[in-house]
Amino acid sequence: MPRLLQRTGLALSAALCLSPAAARAQDWPSYLDMLRPDRLIQYLLQTGVMALRSQVDLRYGGISINPVTGYVSLTDIELWPLFDWDEDADCRIAAERMSIRSGGIENPDRMRLRLQISGGSAPASCLPPDMRPMLQAVRLNAIDLPRLTVDIDYQISSAEADLHVYGEVAQLAAVDLTADFSYLWFEARDGEDPMPVAFLSGAALSVENLGGWQALQPMLPPPLTDPATAPAAVEEMLSGLLAEANRDAADAEQPVPLNAAQQAFVASAASAWPAFLQDPTRLVLETGYSYDEDVYLDFAYYEGDLTALFDDLLPRLGRSAARQRAILPAALLRQGLGEDADALPADARLALGRALLKGEGAPRDRAAGMALLTPLAETGEAGAALALARAQEQADPGAAYGWALLAGAAGEAGAGALLDRLERTLPFDAVLALQSARAGAPAPAPERLASLTDIRAAAVARFTGRGETRAYALAAAYAMLGAAAGDAECADILAEIDERARHAAPDGQTAWQAAERAASAAAMQAWLARDLPAQLSGGN
Image 1 (cartoon, rainbow, N blue to C red):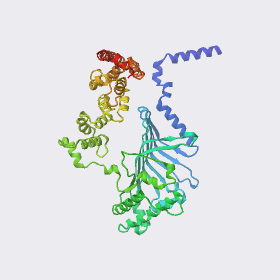
Image 2: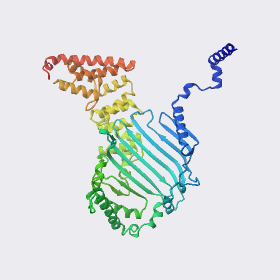
Image 3: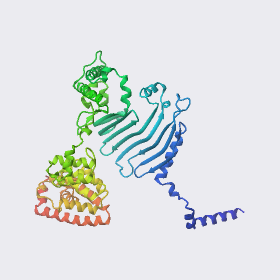
Image 4: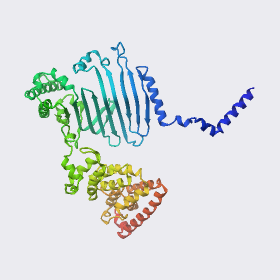
């Protein structure tokens, strides 16, 4: 009997393995389906949800996942946190949708975490008892959160980071915080606790009135709500608060007088507040220096010297942010989009073209932006060329590479990194053709052959594309000359180019063989015509 059962099992197994048609009819999922990235992410999320349910009651309608873009969405969310003060379990937090966005797999150099909640709501019972009067003071019995966004975008290569936080409470206010960092990370040397290393390009905090001011206004002292007396009242109140804060920070016995930056901040508040009273729409607190600059944030030093924080950030209170004030005038936009665009100065066309490409200061119109920037880039304007390259990086990598070559030759920062990214997308034969179209034949220039130092510098410039047009064939010609004279750096550059060609597709390898023959012939011609053996043998 055991042998019969064994044979029967083997027969059934063979039948299943040899019957693909039957398997397709049943539409059985394969084991590979279980390893799909979206399935794995869903399993992990579901495991996390079940673990979370041990602490709070939670349910949702469905999960949507896109591993390529790093997007995860949960819909129809209900959460019962079971706070200690909520004895009747009345606190129910709901949201129509919660989405989480990471950097995705398309750009491994980018770390991004974006959390967004839409259609959120919670009753007053979710707040601690001592905070509920604040909600009642603004005549609300529940929190209605139409939208909440927290977005952190970090570039690993440059350590640049952008922070954006937005929250809207219906019938109360909308708060928007943006901060741009030219460098952001942490330092943990000698076993110390990690400390942030932050260079801030600019920040702005905007508060928009959606009805909350009308509820709060009756609770404020009359001098603060009368436009006639508000400037003096604001100046007196803020000056006193800052003087006391200076004393606490410096651990002094008496209030510390305000420095010039603090006085300027108080003056801006005394000007902005009466204007807000007459038109209670928005107040903006922002850094007062240009976004083209950056400031190192020395948090440890600020603890003992609050005035230094004001000196660094130059905070200002106003009715609009710098980026809102940078909106381009309609007359300038009309001229830039019309037939008289060429009459605009080059700097105006550059600013308008960038604004149209990015959609900052004017509605985004990439075609119009490219039309404005193309003539500038063709005349050698490096900023216009780099803007065009970045705008076409995804849609037309070949055209983007040509503009990036021009920007790199002019020394524009960021062009080299863009060239490297595009070369990971473009075939190697296309890269060589685009370089040849910009740089010409791989013939070393006589003025670059005066010394081994000059030859090495030319090889580096042509290889990197920084200060001169990137051209691997011409870089190889210079590197052949330097390597023949015993220069290890030139030999390394030549080996690097050979390595890139070796990993290219067959068409790229064929194209490089032709380019290498031309480079070798040009190098040999220069070597013999200028008698470089005699010139370089002295160790120049």
